[in-house]
Length: 430
Ligand code: SDX
Image (cartoon, rainbow, N blue to C red; front, side):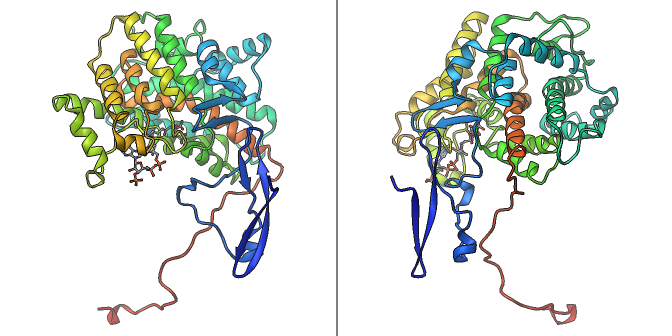
């Protein structure tokens, strides 16, 4: 294999080094292209452009491989806790028993939010989407830790902020939900671990304690683990881009939450349920919606299908489909939307349009079904994604900041607007 790429343009030949990753991915380093040739590349949506070298997550869309620090997500979803997975992503290795106990205790100790933050919930409209309050609250956390928001925080300071974010994101999410349904806040408990604590804050009330079921904890744990990272997706790239200006971690994560909100990204899990409910209300005519999804003029897409990277099945969807079956069986739930989702998947995967375009169910297709069975309201689904993705965002922000050659992200463009023209006084404009 050559170790250089040749580019011939305007009769000149330029050579650029080839970068080869530990899993054989190949890239052409064109860092000096504009200086050498005056040309830039153009790659709408960055589908062919690498923004960084990273050691956090490897995924292979053709082989349906997803590994966090080399460990397959199938093993992590089966054997690890969400806190272990967060530690693995952020620190690069699984925690020892002592490290895990210390990490877990830190989350318990830091799970309360500043009482002053409760006023934010009071002013936020009840009809407001919880992703809006989440991004605002996370961004506002910077106001409570002025000593931590500096351009180059120390390792210890980054550790502190990371624990604050991971510990408090649950409490903010649960408080936003309680506020939206007019129920009193349920505070985090020191005797509960990460996921059960969150479920208790969400569903307990003064009149009715919440019965924590292991099967529900495990289902939500799997969702958090499977969402924990996914290399340079839209929201993680947003965290990196904002962080590259040396903006603090709270501000960078807030940007990631807003990017995740979009229905083409983390908002897809909410859009999947709304789509299934629409199909159900429309008499369950799946073929009608598959036909619409194939007709560009309808602008309708089969939510939960397709992926920029996975051109074979999304390994996370496969795990979540099995988890949904197990959860429903154990809870004795019969949700017609699950049956509808399975029929939709079966019909779509036999349709030439979806086969040719390699559109398979992605992580969002079944996650919403599970969240619904747990009792999470649909508009909180993207918030669940954000809680799960928090470790990945932090890990990438940390990795970027630790790069001695960190540069502010600043893509170029090809200008297609007006050439030189001049100001026309108002009286002369027709
Ligand atoms: C996530 O990047 C990540 O890693 C994201 C994520 C993560 O963990 O962070 O995995 C999480 O965001 C999963 C994706 C959730 N989004 C959805 O389910 C929304 C529906 N899916 C799509 O809109 C779409 O598939 C994307 C956004 C996921 C991927 O879009 P791409 O890679 O830009 O592909 P594209 O829009 O260029 O589509 C390629 C073709 C097009 O047709 P042609 O123009 O070639 O004729 O496939 C079609 C699209 O019209 N197509 C679909 C479709 N998805 C793509 N047609 C119908 N239904 C769909 N869902």
